[in-house]
Image (cartoon, rainbow, N blue to C red; front, side):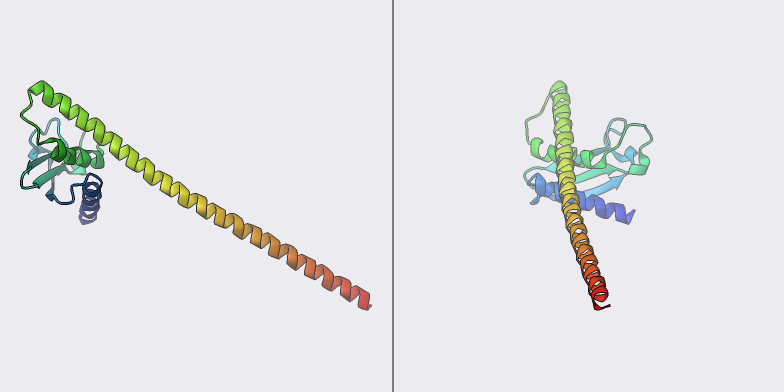
Length: 163
């Protein structure tokens, strides 16, 4: 669990930087789903003071999810962080709040997807570089083998000429 918490803290720091929220003091709590404001629908929530730039972010424990619904902790984390950006707006009606929630969810999914795609591209670049390196190593090995065969052939010919 401590390892998981370290990974979650790393994700939090990463997304604070991406969303330009590094200056916020954010306390992260991993909680049982029943401890969330609306445990039926929520996987996380955030309470904050926008003028003080402090927040308490609660995320649902992974082992507390019982549905077949995919729980993507990173998307939930980004969703809650986006509330820090959009949360300074005036009071919203229930309809507006629902629309805001859907918009924030779409933005969170898109941001995480783009970040993962970028990470995948970096991995692919690394793999391509490794493949190029292996290709050059293979070519070097082939060249060395041909040179060795040529030298051996010359050596044999010199031996035959001496006889």
